[in-house]
Image (tube, rainbow, N blue to C red; front, side, top):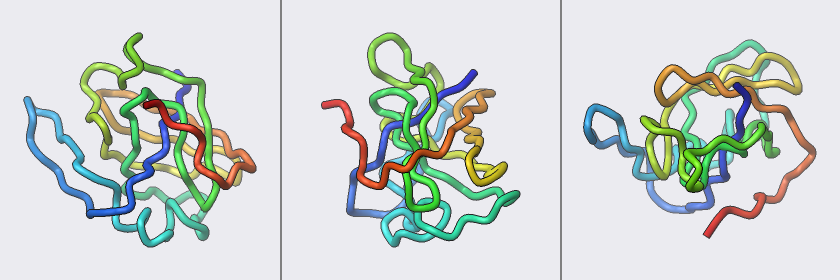
Length: 128
């Protein structure tokens, strides 16, 4: 199953996890995103796995990796929310950079989402 996640456009706070019915709810973006460091900012290494906080409130479609936006086929619950079991508005997981154009996010319940690199540097429009 392929999918991308929506961009995190929050510019405050660090990563906070809260227990919620057995699932971790992420309260904000990762510090590395705010500081424009890998895996969000430039400098990712192929073959490396990174902790990754994905914005999924509007479903899964976009991920910022290596300073640009990567995309997957959108997935959601039919109501512009992430699939059941995922954190919302953020999901905490891991990102494996397979090569210069492909990365896989693992988060939510037993889901691996493959993202493909784009040339987009500005944040895509997020849902309202």
